[in-house]
Image (tube, rainbow, N blue to C red):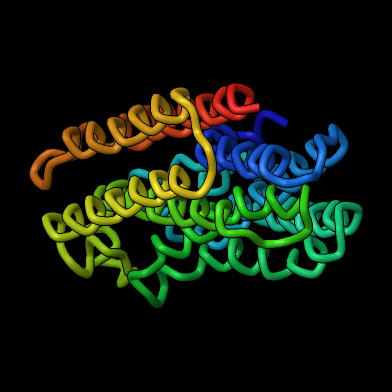
Length: 284
């Protein structure tokens, strides 16, 4: 179990999971649907299965690339802790469990489940042919709030889409920063990324622009639904972490990329989600 937790980098659930809770409780508090512990459990299972499938497939597909990259050769498959066959089997099992779980939720979630898997699994291949791979990753994680909203309501709405748009821009932005570490390696291996396409300076500028958009999208719900002071606190922390993240990384100094990637983004998502949930209780 410990090996598979390492394979799917379980600690990275700190990015999308908080926004799944936002989507779920947004639906509970802004519609006539009531809270259901069963639906919450189903939502959590879907998140775990989809993310586990995506990460395991990424490690499987990138195993030969990872073995060449000094930064990634310690990952589980290149290091020999898990076989490629085991990783692929793990991927398929989680895909089936994800689809099966959506079948018990509602018809729309079930019908859209292959589309969701196509997005989250398809990301792994995109750096082989497009520098927009970061946006595809952002799109995959952005399914969390709208997907959780669909679990409760079985229908689309504007508010969860705004949060999904924020996640798309936020994740794409910090993935560009993370990819700065591999610019030289990616160029040598003819892999595609924003840093390879634009260079470090312009890549950071694009990341900044995406994070500004992310902040805009979490501000817009203020005009569509009542919010209290906890939401503003969460908004302040989220935006402050975005600004702080960019203060840590410079084109000529990437020594703090991992801190910017994991710590600041983890704080941003968790604190914002907690403030959102407190706000929902405050409003009610």
